[in-house]
Image (cartoon, rainbow, N blue to C red; front, side, top):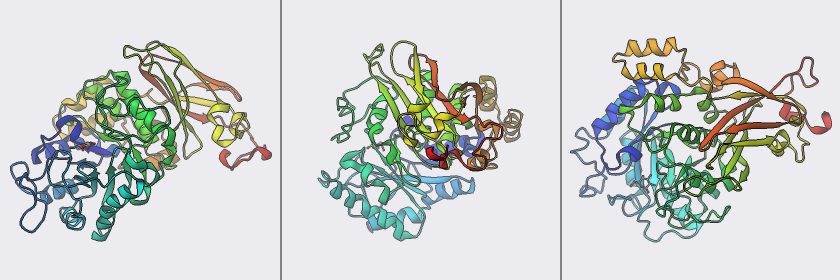
Length: 473
Ligand code: GAL
């Protein structure tokens, strides 16, 4: 979790941007929700290339005090420092890339105190086309980073090429699986390559830019389960707060990225945050999906394309679901179509991974439905948090709102201790063997945590439901 400058600022980067943004992360309470990586994307390099010793160098007009001073500053504030390069001759913005300079560059990153490297794939010099060729090109940097002895996360950015989801986890911590996101929910755009791929066809060449939230979800759906603790599909940086989507669309985008365990990199200008955007990204009940200790992505249970179309000719609904560490089940019902719709899903269908055809033990219990947006921060509180000018003032606002603080209570502990701030609000029950049915407005999502209703004296006391086999029932 953190922030990356690319979506809002592109190449307009500077020391000042990073430092003022890091102040905002802290004062808005975002660091204490887990957003601790500040990532400098492309365009930090000197346009004249490497120095006479072959070292990458920053553009001094943008970074007058060098890069180590930035990481020192971030570390002193309890934040981490991310940087960017490309497994190519040049970066995508045509600055010097790291291909065949991996050892030198990894050493520079380690010297500068870098904690994460986003590693792009532009100007790859033709070293692409099969999984092995791409793997070897990226592995060189993975090995070089490891050899530095510094713990540096590696975020691959080859946009899903060469089936990165089949090998990314062995050399990196996350891998981008699509072309670049843009600030649109369903709108198709020719700049997003492969936007006419058949469902399930993951082999896209030239993934492009301007990929919608829906496109990215459809692309990752066939292999969402490849995300494992320590290695995650990266659905690209968030667009929340950028202005191109409605509040409901941003809520859906954010919850899906959290539920699918994508890295959560905020992509908006944190120094001019709107109260609505803040109250989306700071919802601890949604963040607890992202940070759930079980560490598996939600997967798509159903896609229905036979629904009323929106203004872009898109009509589809999705049901996404996933198992959580404490036995709860996360469920997201999304309506990408043009009309409000009742979306239904049975317990039997939700729990197929535990036994097909309604045979899962889970199907025999009642499940309480918890709405995870129920306790979203009020607009008035978010507004006063943004307007407050001193640290004590902000701390008092967060305290009065009883806001979750993951630095004090890590999510794992909060979940274990059933901190109510992570569980939304109970709004109903799905009876054993029953069906979850909810009205979902056009271009929005419902986000639930289903909690098994424990029965007095139930036979499985002391034993997690997930370990109960159907024969034991
Ligand atoms: C793209 C990448 C973007 C951004 C950009 C910088 O390849 O997907 O996220 O890093 O390069 O030039």
